[in-house]
Length: 229
Ligand SMILES: [Zn+2]
Ligand SMILES: [Zn+2]
Image 1 (cartoon, rainbow, N blue to C red):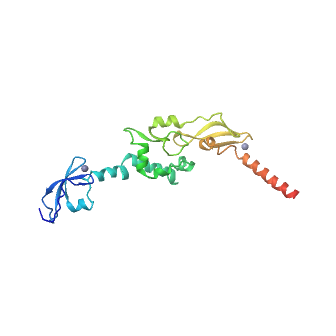
Image 2: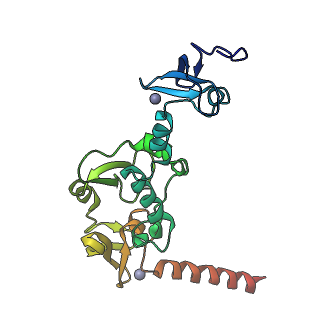
């Protein structure tokens, strides 16, 4: 052993514990045999241990890649797809997601947070599903589900229900047979098609006549005020 080489036996560097010194590397640097926490043995140059460039047998990089980058995993693909549907107006599914107000919660910008909340995809034909179809992508509303499970929860029958002045008459099937809109009769006699989301959230409550009446009333009040003044 060279006189200025510090004995590193027994020291820990990340996941590695130094076992013993081995033959120097080609350029004369001291090399050490290390035991990794995963059970693998690896030979590392002392310098790489001390300046923290090597902290495992290589398993650490593999683990973090799987969790953070995760490129190529089904979960990562699902995560990317979810963001695309909700934020990219050029996405083919935009109309059914971002286009009708479906959002992804802030904390899921971080893929690893999303993965912890939703978990790994089970084996088989599972995909991301929102329990409440009008709800956002957020903890509690998202799970892995099969197509059959998804179809069961997705269809909400609004036939005969009242929403302000509107009465839902029948569903108007959108893409892939999913009822997206409802043909409604307004109390004024007009017939209109309204998306499920707008009805259930109370966004649309008439064929448009309600707003017109309110506007007219407001204008009238303003005119009256003008005359009396
Ligand atoms: Zn290892
Ligand atoms: Zn109306």
